[in-house]
Amino acid sequence: MRGPLYEMSQVSIVLPSGPHAQSTQQVLAALGSHPQGLTRAEAQARLSRLGRNALPRAKSPGVFTIFLRQFLSPLIYILLFAAAISLLLGDWSDAGFILLVQLLNATIGAAQEFSAQRSSEALQQDIPGEIGSY
Image (cartoon, rainbow, N blue to C red):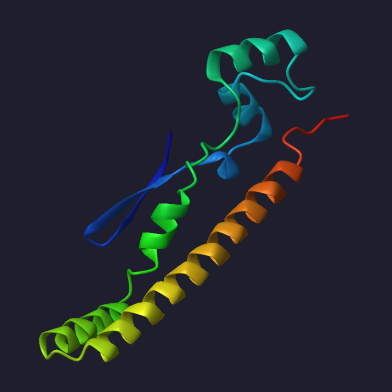
């Protein structure tokens, strides 16, 4: 549905009429409902026809993906570049130390992120998925 056409000098603007700009009866009619709500039969029919009113859940990344994401940072790129330069110059101890610190940092970061992800999923399970109307 579109709202009224407003003209300002040379510009024409068509404003949409959303549910907020309509009467209760218009909204209920558009939704095929009434002030008392849906009957159980109609609610079941809509549930089977339309499915649950729920957002899709994204698949959680695995530990390996989380570990690899720890290396997606400009600072990490600079440090890895420094390690590569150290290797090219034959400075094995500096290159080894830089790489060891990067692996340790990625391991700790991945462990913390994976733990936070599991905690978040556990909290999601505690949120009630249904409500009742009275």
